[in-house]
Amino acid sequence: MSDQETKKKLSMVVMSGDMDKLFGAFIIANGAAAMGQDVTMFFTFWGLRALKKDVSTGTTLFGKMLGVMYGGDISKSNPSRFSFLGMGRWMFKKMMGNHNVSSLVELRDLAVTLGVKLYPCQMSMDVMEIPAETFIDGVQDPVGVGFFIGEADESGTTLFI
Image (cartoon, rainbow, N blue to C red):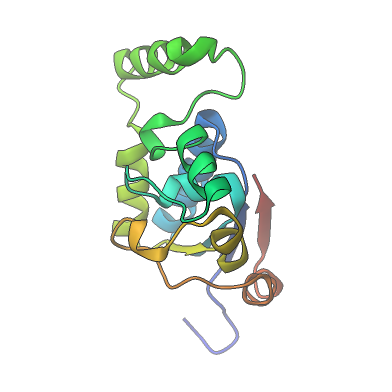
């Protein structure tokens, strides 16, 4: 690149842990990374599920209750509509498999392979009692909103999912 060219950059807040929204987030991130863009994903609140291993979290009563009620990893994500107590998740996974669509785990792993930077929100981790050691390999150290604002300020595209 010449001195006057700068690498394109995409920054994204991922606040939802819904299956369809996570699919959209990882497909967009992987597409941008495959096109040579720097990609930063900032996972906050429910979006943290996308980074978790399938382990229990929480230390206080409320934290443990939240860990049980919303527990699980990315494979436990339900569609934002038509969940039907988990039946919708099964149905969508089956339909996507029939059309050779990669799973959420595969899309997330591809993002790590392509160099997408996955940042968890420290404040959300504290509130939801999710320690960093419960995240998959490839997740960056936790950051605050100020870090994300700096990334977004340098980006040509910023998304909120």
